[in-house]
Image 1 (cartoon, rainbow, N blue to C red):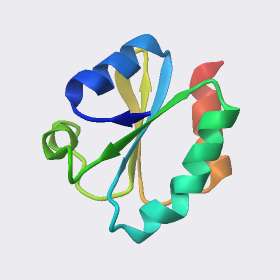
Image 2 (image 1 turned 45 degrees about the vertical axis):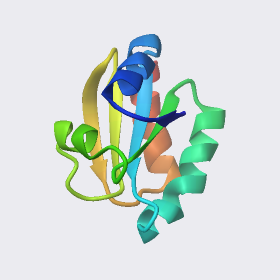
Image 3 (image 1 turned 30 degrees about the vertical axis):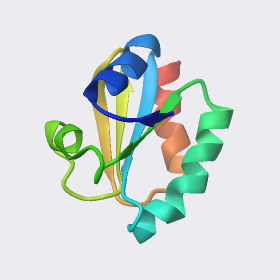
Image 4 (image 1 turned 60 degrees about the horizontal axis):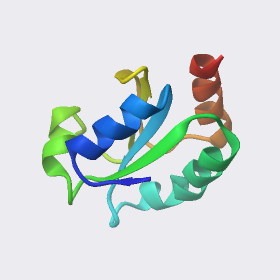
Length: 102
C-alpha cells in the first residue's frame, strides 16, 4: 500500500494489527535493494505493508523521526513498536514481524 500522508498511514495502522511501514526514497540505493524483500514479505505474512516516500511525505517522515532511509517502522495495534534503519535481510524482517503477529 503506497501511503500519501498521515491520514492514510493512520487508516492502514488502524485497520491492521501489524503494519510494516517502509520509509524510502526513489534515489536511495539501499531502498531499491530491499524493495523486493518488502514486497515478498507483504505477500507472505499477515502484516500489512505500507510504503512511504519520504520526499513526497516530509512531514510524515519528520513526525516519526525518520532521518535516514530506508527506515522501517513496525506498528502493532496502531503504535510504532520497532524501528530498523538500513537494509535488512528478509529473514531478519520476517522474524521481527513474526514476533508481533503470534
